[in-house]
Amino acid sequence: INKNGKIDQVLKKKHDILVQILKEPISTKGPRLSCELTIPGRYLVLTPFSDIIAVSKKISNPEERKRLHLLIESIRPKNFGVIIRTAAEGKKVGDLLQEVQMMFAKWTEIQKKMKSAKAPVKLLNELDKTSSILRDILTDSFNKIVVNDADMYHNIKTYLSSISPDQVKIVQHYKGKKQIMDALGVTRQIKSSFGKTATMSSGAYLVIEHTEAMHVIDVNSGHKMATTNQEQAVFNVNLESAEEIARQLRLRDIGGIIIVDFIDMRNPEHKRELVKKMRAFMKNDRAQHTILPLSKFGLMQITRQRARPEVKINTAEVCPSCNGTGKINASILLMDEIERDLNYILQSRPKAKLKLFVHPYIEAYLNKGIYTKSWKWYFEHGARVKVHSKPDFGLMEYRFFDKNDDEIRLD
Image (cartoon, rainbow, N blue to C red; front, side, top):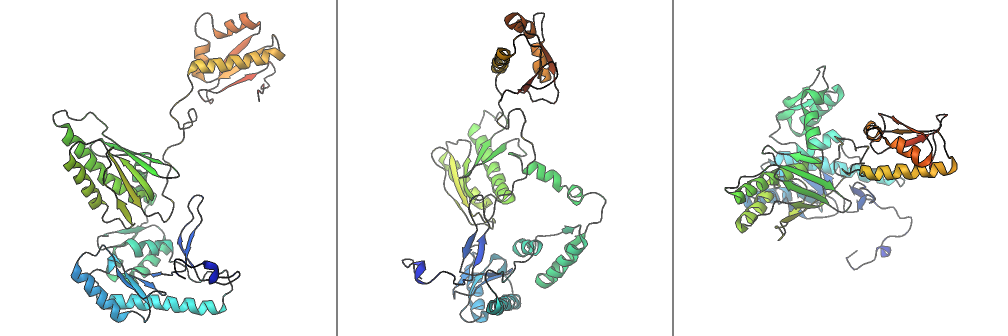
């Protein structure tokens, strides 16, 4: 079907159709499906319904691109397309041929299952999470893989022996008494990296906010910068922040639209250099992304491929007093609320003996001095109100009780 065609011309109700899930459901959006199937490997991706050979843009050497293209042309199955991944750079024909044969065997398995399968049914599983991560990110730069589970340890060694035998030796089985995440310092890094702010060595920090439509990152210097050459100091902070932003986007797997508010710079050369450095810092990011130049307001727009929800790890709890807003009602407004409720209660219970429970700070305020609020209320209403502190109350929380210690509901 071409772009101007209609889906109902080729697809009817109750037709079976072979699809692949490309994207997990995110928030209110459902999963994304495609009929353009791909079978991924470590170096290559096989495309059964295409005959195009594509080379990763990250392989920049023209001679290497040509070598890989000619090599794949000679070993690919007839009428199959192949996407050559960045990891294939420099690989020998034997490595690539072995992977092509493995992926073609998977496709043959899918076709066999289709003949007897009854929809809906899953025809091919993705690799387990550990193996798929290793397949996608394992490089020669890895020097250690530490595992605390015996079964996973053996599974990883088995998988590595098939895709990268030289790296089997870097797998280690952790048997220490401490939690593996604590022993290797991962817990500390998680707590310092996944909060609302990310601090850098210079004292500058990022504030990272999320909305349904976009993500916003604000760059702050964190201290008073030198006045001798403030423009250069601002530029240095922005450069350091750009590197940390690229790291945070990968670490949290933030996707979609990202707006970065850098500290304002006047020098046009500094602005161009910042964009250039930002692109360099994100060069090794596996997710597809686009970086636009700075706007006249100093804002940089980044779009980054979002295949799954961003990683959110809560390292702090919402304040029970302000509900995370950072603000609470002024104490004078709280007094107004208490007195309004007191008036309402005394309309139906004149001269009643009441108890008011509040946070200790508020109790100290109400009972301070010779003529306390309780005396003031007694003279105004002729009713006695004893004020008591309740340490487990929120700062702005209060409740009235009668002489029998029954709470007076004001709902």
